[in-house]
Length: 390
Ligand SMILES: Cc1cc2nc3c(=O)[nH]c(=O)nc-3n(C[C@H](O)[C@H](O)[C@H](O)COP(=O)(O)OP(=O)(O)OC[C@H]3O[C@@H](n4cnc5c(N)ncnc54)[C@H](O)[C@@H]3O)c2cc1C
Image (cartoon, rainbow, N blue to C red):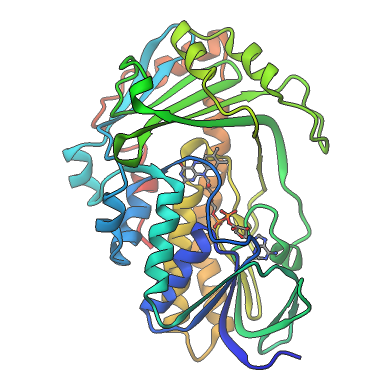
């Protein structure tokens, strides 16, 4: 039996879980976070944070701390990875900041997690526990119950599943599975002095080509250069893990211009990230249990919004739970209703943009025609996303 009943229990201490904890505590709500890894931390490299997420982080008061570790790029540039020609760009300088009221920022994901963690540690209302894995959840009507791998049981008025793409909490709400797309990502960071200045080192550069794209930007105050190489594996077999190896990375990038091919050789080779998302769902909550972040709406990372949407969820959850203290079940449904259509649109747009990046031949020429003439300070295509406010 559980000893005492917690107010809010968050399963998962990633970007989504910690942002939710902070947002709840800032509204006076006590929260308990369990994380299955031995330490709170992030694997991977860079992260782009758009104004829609920056608005939330600003409300939480952590932007000055984030700025100490971040880079504020001047442009998001699309390049043709074969012809080495610019396709289009978005200026993210002064006019962009004025338009959206917030900057565009790139940083190391572990720097973001550390800032969130330190902010959580200063909150008396937050209890953080690493090395504790949830293995089952139960709906007990007016509360929820989590069973942990160490045999203990936690009861809570509200349980939030912030446990990512492979969420166990989600299994409790919907019977579905991640959707594999046959693409794989390789990541890597290198000291900035090892890069040539070819790509414009203060920009976020996205090289696109047939069945591939390649992203580059500086992180950690400009000391490191972050790269992500994504391609369609010819040997993809659903359900298998034996595909998309480093030899396929080299073979796929052999078609690109010399610069991209040389940069792709610098990727980490000991780890790869097969790409998955899930189909959007309309139910995220059941009684006192709800999903957030990748557990609710995992998306392909092609428009760099997965963490941004998790950050938006965090603020939405906190607002609804604070305003609906007397009826948490209704508050969770209100949160789900406020978020589900917008995040579904982001999920579907991520898929569509992936298809758009990866075009070949005449279709790629049509793509260039469609976006090639837009002005770099025309933000109309991204207003719905970067201008969205929780
Ligand atoms: C290559 C790549 C690049 C990306 N780039 C960007 C970008 O530029 N911008 C952006 O916004 N997004 C980006 N994303 C997406 C982003 O990384 C995710 O959307 C984000 O990390 C989701 O956060 P989360 O907290 O919901 O889930 P996660 O980060 O997956 O965190 C879940 C946490 O729950 C813990 N957990 C899981 N199960 C249990 C359990 N049973 N018990 C206890 N703890 C558990 C896990 O250990 C983990 O710490 C990218 C993704 C990839 C793959």
